[in-house]
Amino acid sequence: MTDNEDELTLDPDFARRFDAAPRGPCLLYLVSPASIDEGFADQLKAALDGGPVAAFQLRLKGLNDHAVARAAEPLQAICAERDVAFLVNDSMALAKRLGADGVHLGQGDGDPREARALLGPSAQIGVTCHDSRHLAMEAGEAGADYVAFGSFFPTTTKEVLHQPEPSILSWWSTLFELPCVAIGGITPDNGRELVKAGADFLAVCSAVWAHKDGPGAAVAAFQEVLKR
Image 1: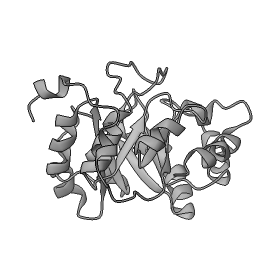
Image 2 (image 1 turned 135 degrees about the horizontal axis):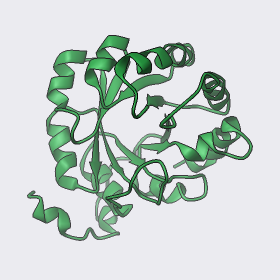
Image 3 (image 1 turned 180 degrees about the vertical axis):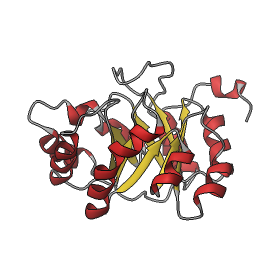
């Protein structure tokens, strides 16, 4: 597939043509706010008290690695206690330094092969693929453990330059075993269609940390949404 073929519209009913093997349950993947304070550790504990969470990604923008490492220490310990994978955003070097469970790479953050060589065979390596089937297949070929598509909905977390249709999740989950993550403006009210489309993980940020009843209530609200 070439980059130009990415521009071809996917048939929303693509997956119905195939007898695809059933996927496992969809899981919740928490992403930190872009900035946090010392009280965030309690928020993370509250979120994890709300229900099962598969992974937590530390995504702090505008800080140097030393500052992120300091912020990471208590959060990483909480995740280890709860058997939640702890991933670092952008920096494979920082993931190595922290002994993190993995790293999430944007398109400008390096090659998954390089991350694998640095972090070892057990590291979880994810790659942002926006709305591109081409980038997702490249990431899979490079040894990524998951590919992330989005932003599916408007979000204030980051500037939205790509907005795929849910059909990209159906296409991916029908043809490939590699897990796919849906991200971008996902809430308990709109996440169901992404689960039905084939998302293996819902990556959520503001819907949890800014929930009016607290992060625990938000995670609890997602549990029904995640069911196949």
